[in-house]
Length: 328
Picture 1: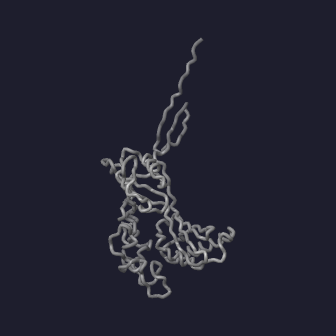
Picture 2 (picture 1 turned 60 degrees about the horizontal axis):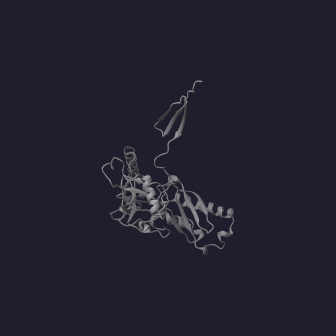
């Protein structure tokens, strides 16, 4: 009796440029997704602005109100605040897409992801004034994550290994995504201890961490706060483009009248005006182009020029990290 002959079906593997692997088994093709080396977690672009009210402002505690009543009150607050923003003429469209009232009586506004360029800290007074019918209001702008620089990180370890070392050694530091190198691969080619960017959950400072150095993969790495900026970043101190206020070494200039004082100290002769960044009364002058609009005007030719340059630079330097600075 002849022995049975078993012929193995050849298997070939081809990898295309779209991140798929094609397995050819017995003449049939099957596509399997190839996992990326570093899983990408995209942080939400939306932000939250929370408005707190003292308990004596209202006669009825929010915990005693049903959901329908709280939602109706949140709808009114959403309309009033969005209307106040649009009336400033600095914001083109209503910035908030949702408002809700917590059981403790706080109102939480959720921003639209198309309003990521709005500096909500400058409009705290506008929000508080729009909600003044509810009483005294304390406004808190949420920051979803904080970025830090870690210097002198050895390149022989992969980024997932570095992330695991941070998680094991420092349980209190909650990472929102895998760290990334600050510079591109060609710039790190001749460096053995470059810098990574670490993203932690919450709005925390270096003083909150309480450490100047972290032990990562049995190496001592220097910890610094990270400040990202580009050519289109506008300084809230001098109003110029190309750096943030935390790194500004110039004298302050007002975003309303271009005078040599901080925007929060902007004066106004009209008694009905709240002064500061909410003022819309003449004289108004841009500190960058000397035309009669605020320095924060989205239609300012200098802002358009900075954004156009930044877009062109990003297209020319694909994969490069944004510029970074370290606060003093």
